[in-house]
Image (cartoon, rainbow, N blue to C red; front, side, top):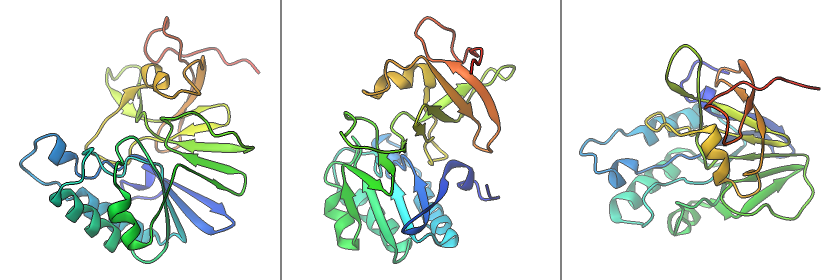
Length: 225
């Protein structure tokens, strides 16, 4: 974990392609779809973080953009982002907000795929059925997992592990997310999951948490080996 605010909301992995940076749910252009008059320019800061991190490979776990369409302003924002992150291998595992993302992405050599199997690691957005293939561990986004930390009364972004699946928080600092107990129901292949392990972005392990509908939000579950 590094000092940059994006560092705790992203993962670095060592793969056969080299240093691999993984991000989820950028939602570039959220200002447009939410009717904000002020541009945050957050995607420019994120591009700077990626350049400074200098990965060999960048994997974006879907929802690169927020507006469902592809207007002129969004096209300009996306072009600026892809242009700014430099010449490196980039994969997008297409998300439910990524309609027509290929129109811009492929101009910059970015590969848009439904999922990516790299070595024995599976990368996908998480809104569709699980592909039928063998993998050791999977990384996904989609639900922007959050957890209510006891004593604070507020939700915070977290990483959620359910078995072989690690769900990343949104890297967008202006967006929050879903209570993990509700969000897990939005992933077709994990909607029946009963428990998950919760980690704060700085790596602190919160504990094993109930994901059942009947439990309270963020209810800790006794850990049994």
